[in-house]
Image (cartoon, rainbow, N blue to C red; front, side):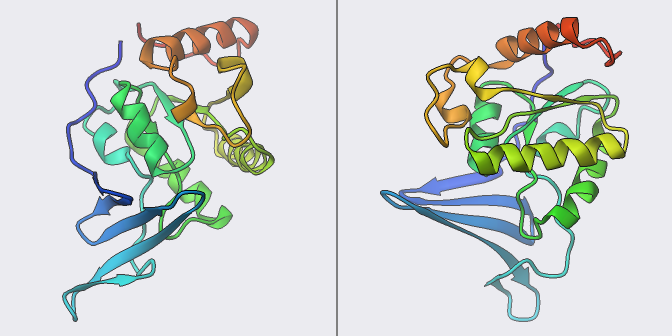
Length: 203
């Protein structure tokens, strides 16, 4: 089964306020409200010695990658989810996971972030889990297209096959049965249907 995910503290939640650390000088702040949320990046300005709203000038890496980087060559299935909260949920279930959302997130930076994942963890398969809505499927399809273009093996997961009762906009939080063991089984089942990926998942 999967190696340990490095116990690096990346997130902190206080009430409805969550902070996700990307580096000592980069973080994302999330405010959860009853029916909505606001998410924005911040960078630490060395001149003012204070956190400032915005992406700053430094490049951002995928969230969660810092916990997986200590295990190059050992983690060969990485789950790509939407958002930092979903990464934290996946890690709590022993699933190696990352998200591309960051301060500089755009379709233009997807390729750069996918290359970071591949460079630090290859050989590996990227299992893409979209949120259960149109925007999620569109985003996942674009990520899959870019990954294939750079030669990164991918597997697109169907949320409703994992959790048939999943509601619109549902994500891994509403998939309580998805953990490290069930993810491996899902990948193995898909590999039986698609023989193009040659790296076998580690059990």
